[in-house]
Image 1 (cartoon, helix red, strand yellow):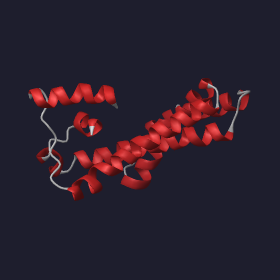
Image 2: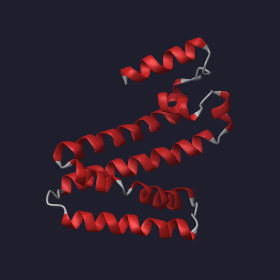
Image 3: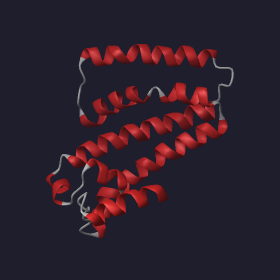
Length: 150
């Protein structure tokens, strides 16, 4: 967080990047806070998973993130990907399953925490996509980089 502060604040104050506008407390709680919660879930899940298990197993499970995005996009946004996109996910899912079966250091804690991270990353992407498509995003200078910085 501190490194991000020293990166974004000078960009905003120098005018190289438009400074985001937060018009009200309600805007913060309704618009920015959920994005922060999703970021927290991504970080929390990954840190817990890495703390309780082998990095190799965590990375195997984290490889399912595209599948989470496809599934949650269909469920929440009602956006259906192409059939080829879904078919492309099958080798990923099969590979994760095969690698997990052979993983000596299998842990339910790691599996659950890594999937919390996956789900949070997918929700962050979905929420951000919806948010950035609103006219309010342009009015408040909420570019993808500014949204991530906040």
